Amino acid sequence: MNSESGTYTLIYRNRSKTRVQVGRLGKIYIQPGYYIYVGSAFGPGGVRARVSRHFRKTKRSHWHIDYLREF
View 1 (cartoon, rainbow, N blue to C red):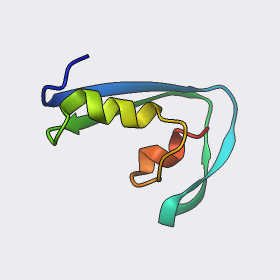
View 2 (cartoon, rainbow, N blue to C red):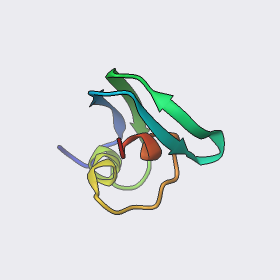
View 3 (tube, rainbow, N blue to C red):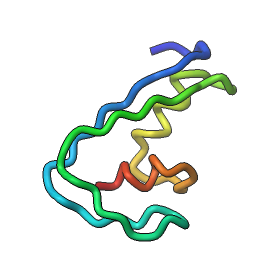
């Protein structure tokens, strides 16, 4: 993975019905299945920086995907 700008795709799999707190949206149910997130990384550090952030264990939840990443 490089530090160039671009877009990226994350694929998540949820194996069971789960209730998740998603920021101001409140608690929502996430159904079993695959979820695909497409992100852009045109800021400093490019794709490497953005994807690295998604995989950090501890981080401040900022975007909705950050909340869903927990399930």
